[in-house]
Image (tube, rainbow, N blue to C red; front, side, top):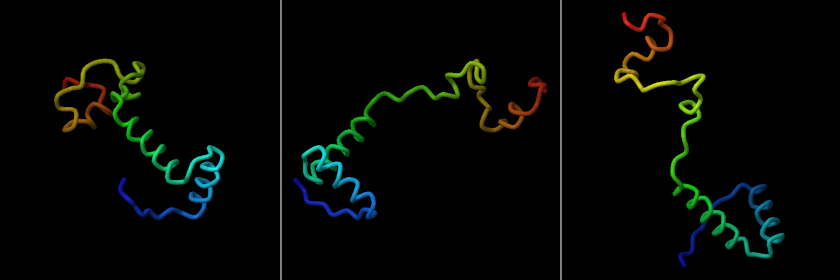
Length: 81
């Protein structure tokens, strides 16, 4: 293992020490477990963006010029002009 020094806000460290005691593990072990959980959650397949999943807001394909003409798509009723 590699030794690492981190700086924590006082309240966060106090809460972490209390939680480690509740779990009957060292503070270092609690931090390792939390990091492992966080890193594992980042490996999951990305979830669907809620904006694009909401068909009341979004229904269709992304226009190819959306980034350039976003105001037009947001505020103009006549999309042909």
